[in-house]
Amino acid sequence: MIANLDAAQLEWRVVANNSQDPVAIREIGEGLDFHSDNQETFKLPSRLIAKVFLFRNIFCPLWIADRTAYAYSTDNAFKSVGGVKFWRDVIERFYDKYKGIHQYHLNLKREVTTTGQLISPSGRIYKFEPRMRKGVLEWPDSDIVNYPVQGFAADLMSIARVSAWNRLKEERERREVLFVNTVHDSIKLDMNTNLRRAIEIGRVVQGSFRDIPKNYEKIYGDKFLVPMESDFSVGINGLWQHNINLK
Image (tube, rainbow, N blue to C red):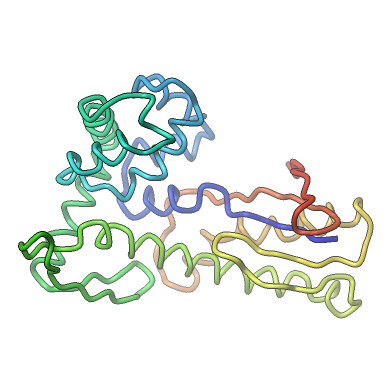
């Protein structure tokens, strides 16, 4: 059986931690359905649109909102919802709610334009320089807000992967579990067992995600500000997967 454990809302949790945005941290910590709240707050037609918008917009600095609003207005998944003005208003509502994220983006841009680089909480160093865009040199704004999130998320997955490898020592030695790999935000396992045992093993690996804040502090000497969770699915192959709530 193939099992898959995805880090739940990984990029959003990283943004909440890195920005120290109090609203995002509170919503995650309290387990609130912030997608439904954002649907109402941003006046969007569905929870799904609000969810997709949030994960796209965390890489959209407010100062390029006009460009991003145009992109939403021409995207097949969003253009039926509204035009440029509508999406510009939604983006501004997003940053009005999550003011800490707006300030975080400003701090990233200031650091890059001052030093030419960013250093992530885990120590990764990213170098940037202006690029030519329509005859004008511009800083790569989307990359500036994207790289520290994606790189730090990968570091957190490395922590989870090592923890899961250690937790599954006995299962690996019995050849009950083949540790396949991590793919972006998920750990994949090939298990020579039945469904009941697969769920038990899933709960073991789930602990690797929940222990990320503790292990991060142990490794880096700093606190990770939000809890981590994972979503579990299992099936006879990678295509036929069934979501199972492990809680």
